[in-house]
Length: 413
Image (cartoon, rainbow, N blue to C red; front, side):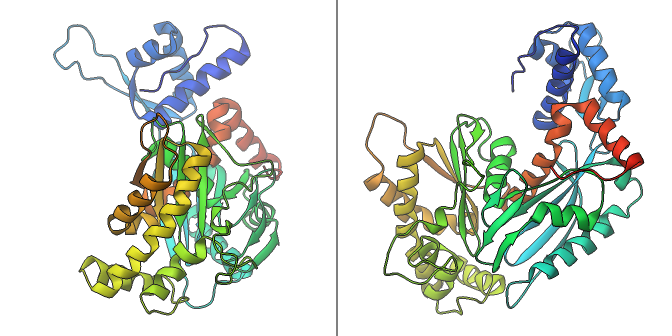
């Protein structure tokens, strides 16, 4: 259970903080009885009741009759985040596919659509066109647009956190894309549009809802065509001065190695990413998701070439991972994307390398575990980022959206 340290006061600032803490608790941790919220906050019962009533009046939470479970007295009502209240639009752009979803409070996916791409990586114009078409189909549902409070986008490549500018997406061939601005103009929804790197958002989701819940120091390693990392240190995301931290796929592991899409040679993702797997298995390295699925199906049945192709990734993956463990000292490394799917065959070799290469000091061995959220981790991380302004200031966040809808466009955030 997450403790909420909220001082009791009648000031407007503390009222806002109390509302934020209550909404954040039921959004992240699930339903809580009023008695639980009293114990967590240290506020008195009547103050908690007033705060809950205020949030319920805005449609952000709802209450249900509590279950006494045989205890004496009247049961305390249970407070739930209302997934039919505020909504965000979450977008996840991968190299081979695009997912767009409406997500309600509590990070409940209300509806989603996905589009797979085959052949050459899609152009920027095609991706933006698909985002527009897929988003409009979801937003056309009755009541969705009126409840929308933000848009979150998980994008490949280094993304400047200040303004959602995609500096370079080598596996898509994009450079210098003002992604947040383009999507805001394209959708014209009058709500904040927040674009972040997919690995950073995957780490956020796993930390809040997945394999990293309760862990304040973790590294999330995501792989599709490329390889990226999201880092949580001391409970906070580590994103760097501009938001470009975590581009671990472009660590040089062999200066004379294979060319990488970034323009360098011998990058880590050239020996542990999707193309390396397909090359090891004798498939077209650019064969895409369907070829990857074929290799994985063969590996699951024990076909020797496919098994060997996966196992060949384990040593370079373990070597690179050991460097990250020595650098960031995480308690947990979460494997996402393709790495999570390959985990059963990768782990013996990875653990051997970690045992040999992680500095031997007085600490518990790092745990390496597959993602609990799977391919949804970047999508849910994008949703969480889009909800953040509302969670930080529930009443102003909802009121501001209503004002903007009445009065015009909102600047990108």
